[in-house]
Image (cartoon, rainbow, N blue to C red; front, top):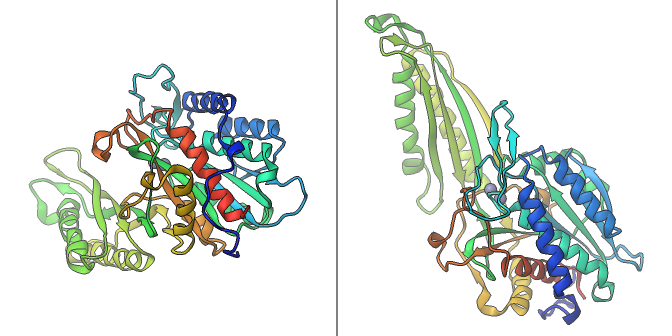
Length: 416
Ligand code: ZN
Ligand code: ZN
């Protein structure tokens, strides 16, 4: 990419949302909000996105089951510079309590067969609606850009299954190869503002399900047992030493033991104990170190009890979210030119995790992923957090800001 064409300037006047386009944006968002689907089950959402892309005359393909990729080619026929815009599509097993007239009453079935209420409690409905509106504006204004925009409507962000499924299904072999991947995520900041991190923006994450196998016995005869509860209790305690003793204080890491299940009755020593861990680390290097320490401790505690090696299953692994250190500041300058300097601010890395980084890292191209305010309070604590029953962003200025930010970022990478 050449930097010569990239002076940060606001969007051309005609590319701002008109009242008619704003109405469509709101209608599409409300439709999506009312029809949330769980991760990797986004069948109706995918079909609905395809119908919208058909209306816009944008070629599309199914990828990874419920993923949809739209390829917006410039009418001049030249592939030119290519940029990918990613919007995630899945919702969560959360019962909406927003009090909104268009609140979700949907239900779904979790992979284990449990029925659950479903809500767009992470705002992915805003991401889809904003992506479609950006595509609509670009289709109407070919005079403002050149090149190709690949819109990736990605399923399964919440379980980290989606980006992996797209890559497994050959996403980047099927579409023009992008020079960068862009995207945004709504967060509990003031609507109309954008926050970003340069470099490592979010945590890598891994979950582990651990089964300790002991030997059951009558509660009065512990000498005949290998007590898996004592074993697991020691393991849980010892695991707290990983972050405090093995990770540098400057490396943000978390090891949480979130579940501990063993036993049914006080006078029966059970056969097994199960724990589940959630781990957040800032870099692949720290991830490898923490993961090795966890395996070492779990195995050593089993050995200390005279128990067999525990079963350790890793799941829900999120990659790094690394914002390119050169492209990010220049894209943010473009967003500042459009939204105003005070609306776009840098912030420290977040402990949360995302799988968008895998899409860029698979190609070795830059990622620029920013956060979009969606609420009326100035402080994060004043607003509902992602994944809570109240997480329903205000329509405006959230949605319009998101569309204009998307367009500013896309045009910046394409060059004008
Ligand atoms: Zn989420
Ligand atoms: Zn999310």
